Image 1 (tube, one colour):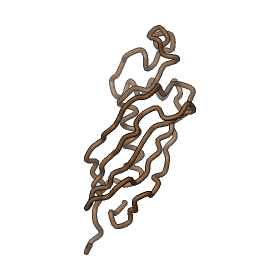
Image 2: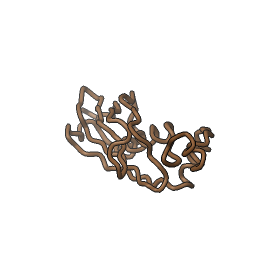
Image 3: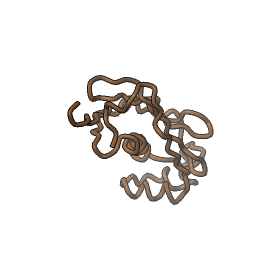
Length: 139
């Protein structure tokens, strides 16, 4: 578990990699009930103008949450996600990375700067996740 006293502005969070396989995209679409064919059918996705099937919004939002949650632990409370904006698709057969760092701190709230990137560059964000961290006893 991460405590607010242990955090410094500029600290890098461990990056998280997501190899985007057909299996992962199909499972994510089923798990979050987004059955739009653009997320699991290459032929259909190409008919809509996309290069390939691609990750859906819920998957991408959850990737931001996972990055912050892995770093902060279960004692943290996510307060907000801001600046989430798709710039380009995260398509099958590429690897998507989530990169983040501590941008600011105010009391117990840490602002994490975050983004998704793949082999073509930034795909989602940049944005921020605000997370409230616990204090150590006696602090």
